[in-house]
Image (cartoon, rainbow, N blue to C red; front, side):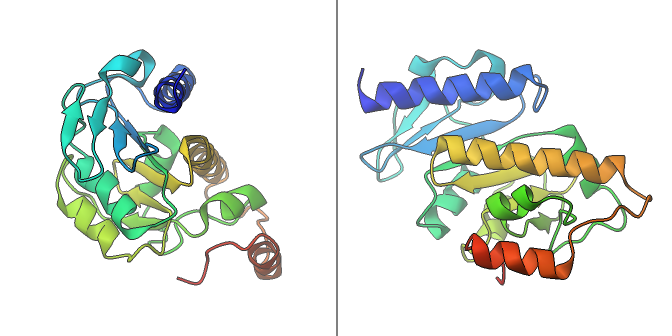
Length: 216
């Protein structure tokens, strides 16, 4: 099995795992990963994470030209913005996960630091998450908004829409976006209850110990 075949299988396996656990439903969400030659494998438009076909993934060459597979997701500008601005990005995942979307609708949502500091792992895997405003699905302005962050954030939350996370590889990106949703679920479960979160000192220690991107 070639490295690309393995990557195709891994993309579909992880996507189905997220679908089966209700992290995105219907034909929502999209996923992409860098290939060894610098190209991309991308989930096609209108497809379900539960039924992706490894042979039909959209295949792009290193210059950004579609060379094989079905037409790609309409959110390509969003994915490309992460790849173009973050040299460490090896994969990008976008979900329509319920709790993170619900948290984005709260009137007290923090635009610059979207996730409350409740557990260490969201901080370690995501750094600070930027809450972006609502855009129509497929609007290239979403990509422009990510480019405006100049590669300083690995994760953004699209208000009333869903999270987008870039990781060093497909497994890291999926793990991180699941951590984002888990933390959003905790935040919604405890909303208005004044939960005891991590202290400022706790956060500083995590950032220093695990070399977290934080100050941007």
